[in-house]
Image (cartoon, rainbow, N blue to C red; front, side, top):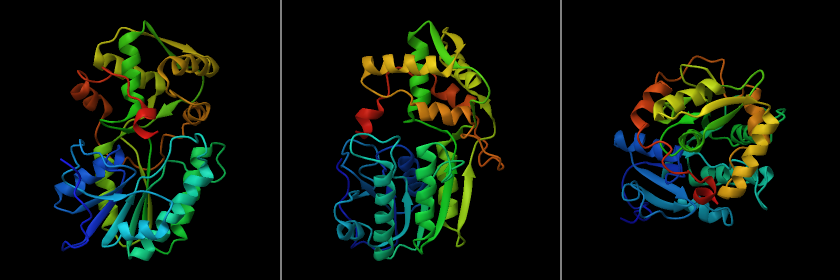
Length: 312
């Protein structure tokens, strides 16, 4: 079924969610729809075959025409902004992404949006050594300066159907006799379920105060423990080999040549080594990774999940 056209003539408030046909935005849309809310997506392209296409109205996420972007936001009370990129590619830089975020916020204000829930990342900082975390912090500053009531959600590693990292760890574990894991200090992660992140986002949307909230799960794992949990769930027998991070990157580059996709970047490994995907705040959710893995085990890792094919 095709996505519904713009719904500005219908009665009632609208929630606009960027990227419903992608990953996190889809979970937010499902949470809103389950609560009887109306949802419009701003997406780069229609996805008529997507399960949510018939349930949401369709607007366009584009940054060539700010006035048109504002028109696609008309009638919305809340904007859930998940727009981002994993790393710069081609002509698209972090500066572009932050600038696009500022444009989206200006368009939201012009359209009369009264609350923005923006997705950032745990430990975002403008002084971070990592571009992803610096840019996220700059986007947070743009939101603070927008004049719109806001909530910032700062997730760690979000697990759920449609996520790339765990899917491709499982894919590799099913196919190769060994799996390289970077050794040394750090490399801790605190995964949180996409369902609970979406629930937190919707709850924060209902508040009136400006708030920044971490979204982390109940258990901290070393990367070796995380990979081991995936291995046990899918019944793989790969040997986990601890080695320097440089060797992991070199192996990832070889994999990228074969697969035509980026498996892991130097910055991503650095952020993992620095434990940036953990939080000092109380856990926002109770869902355990092992429980989710047990449910998903049969299908997890059966096919390679291409980030390039989805987003580029």
